Amino acid sequence: MTLDSKLHRTLVALFCLGLAACGGGGSSADSPPAASTTPAAATASSSTNACAAIQPFYWEIGNSTEKVESGSVGAAPPTANTPMSIASASKWLYSTYVVQRRGGASNLSAADIKFLNFRSGYTNFDTLAGCPNDGTIDGCLAYKDNGLYTAATDGSFDYGGGHMQKHASQEMGLGALNNATLAAELQSQIGNFGFIYTQPQLAGGVSATADSYAGFLRKLLSGDLAMKAALGSHPVCTNPTTCSAAIFAPIPNSESWHYSVGHWVEDDPVVGDGAFSSPGAFGFYPWIDSSRSYYGIVARAVAQGAFSSVQCGRLIRKAWLTGVPQ
Image 1 (cartoon, rainbow, N blue to C red):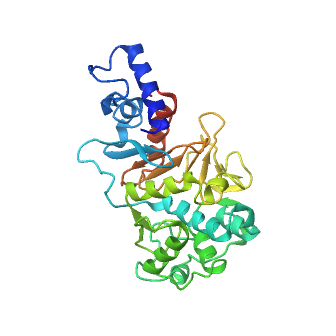
Image 2: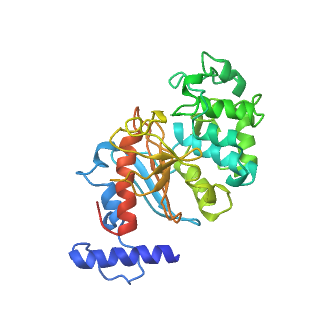
Image 3: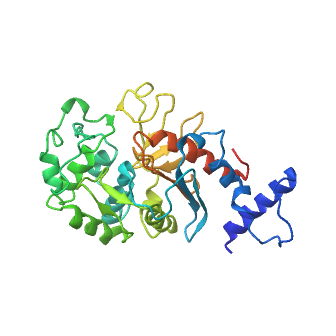
């Protein structure tokens, strides 16, 4: 049993003693409680909080070496091994590839940072259509207006897929790669976790399982990937209502996050906890806590599911870190 597991179970035991409501009996102090009694699991399966609205889903929490707690919630829920489109969670994979290939965040060029901050002016990517499934990175850029540059948006944060698509072609020399060769190229730098590309687009083309993405996050947390030190680096403001250098962010205007190199920093001054994340449009939500000690995933696949997964995942994360159900 790891130190993290023992610490969390100690918190759970103290919480249960305080409420005298966790049940069980006859087991040693080291025995794990029933999943339904842990703060994180109780939060995930609650019928009254933000997690109730997003069922069914799978969730998981772990550290740099192992999965520590997980569960499937709702009717016919996905599991750790259910493949799904992770949409914008793909962005964290590509940015990690870039940082790794460059040899660390300190070696990123000014152009790398601008593209990965979504300030490049390539803001016409067709988010709904994406690009042809059987084409290449350059073919995707040539599709519709995906590769069109707009001078008026250059220098401002404008969330979209065109920035990474152009960066991969222009700055990394990957334009001729298709789904299979693109996946192999990323694996050469960050490891083979079983991801596949269903479209040759860097910002949203990956299909994965929660288990495979968790393997990536564990490697990141271990420090084997240079992205660990790069988390939160080169942040830019993103809320158009509070930031003159922002045009569009896919989160409610009631919250103000920053965007780092290919991932979010959830540092809203009111509700933020500083976690690093990359929520996908269909509800796949991976995160690393602000201390860079734990990762978590909420996995589901529905239309327009990103922020609702964030709201649930935020509660699960808080329950895990505090030992108190939310």
